Image (cartoon, rainbow, N blue to C red; front, side, top):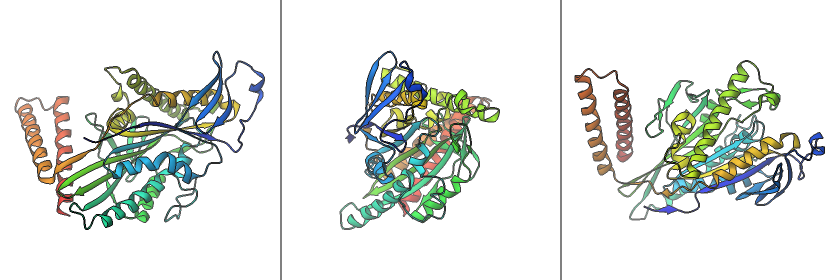
Amino acid sequence: AEEEVGAAEQMMGINGDSDSPRRSQRESDPAAARLLGLQSSQVVMYVPGQGVRPYPFSRVFDGKCEQDKVYDLCARPAVLSCLNGFNACVLAYGQTGSGKTHSCFGPQGTLEGATGVAGQSGIVVRALSEALEAAQMLEESSKLSPTPVTTKLAAQYVEIYNDQVTDLLTGEVCDVRRAGGALAGAVECPVESLDGAMRLLRAGQVRKRFAATAMNDRSSRAHTVFILQVRQTRGDSLVNATLHLVDLAGSERLKKSKAEGKRKTEAVGINKSLMVLGKVIAALVEGKSHVPYLETKLTTLLKGALGGASRTTALICCRQDDAQADETLQALRFGERCSLVTNAVQSVAASSASEALAAIDSTLKATLASMESLRNRGKSHLSAFKQLQDRAEQLTQRRRAIADFARQ
């Protein structure tokens, strides 16, 4: 299989209008963490107990950086990798109010009435636009080739709130399969035009959970994951690749966000899932035999992107005022750990459609036989039977998708 080198990347975005860090009363405290400066490929912090400490990144963006530049350097390589048959992921991480949703979807109101890419459009809109344009160009340029290429795009759009998954396109509760991390019960909508893609994004936007806290007037209270499936025929071969675009809910300290009641419960849930994400990254860096993907729905869904065959870029978003220096330091450390994870990005090309269908039929037959055996022994109440049932449903859906695609 083909491999792509340099799959583990991290980018850094600093939210703020000034080139220099904002000072506060913390400046007089020599023991407090603080941001000292930004350079093109590193962030310099004062770290208590360590002194001046640089944190290297593939690229650092300041608060004045335009959205198109963030996309070009951070997300475009992931989109192009996906169109070339490799799985890819862009993951936005940081405290609440640090600019994650701004980077992924643009500022509030950007999607309303939009029919294409605008100056403030975020990563998701730009990725959809480029994927559609590139797919069309690829088909046109390969028409006279011995192996013409046909590309079909489809999208799923979910949020994870207190470890419950909701389909943002329907509002219905769905789930993540523990085996493989695929979504179960979430609709998959064809993406045939940018106008149609914008309608999907607007439909999802109205169902997202936002709330005001002391740290952010419009804080995302759930993790948002936009999944773009890229299915190609290259002659008689099939290629399936997946692009995950992830806007994580922001970590927050309760004493700063002043969250109470329902907002406090939400904050605890967000921080817990981010803590498990940190544990997963740490286990991957340390090469542990057990990685706790299954502890949350978020890490189960992102299993392939975090430690599998995927080109994954972490976009670390931070605020530059001294009052948020502790949170900035925590985010920088997360980004540093991400850069130590090595993924082997393998091409996900399949054999011919007939061979792929034959392999699925064989596996499906064995799965149904195992289910029948358990049913005959009165064991259909066991969790093993439910797992087999989910597996059979997943295989049936995959077979239908391949058969439909092969007929086009």
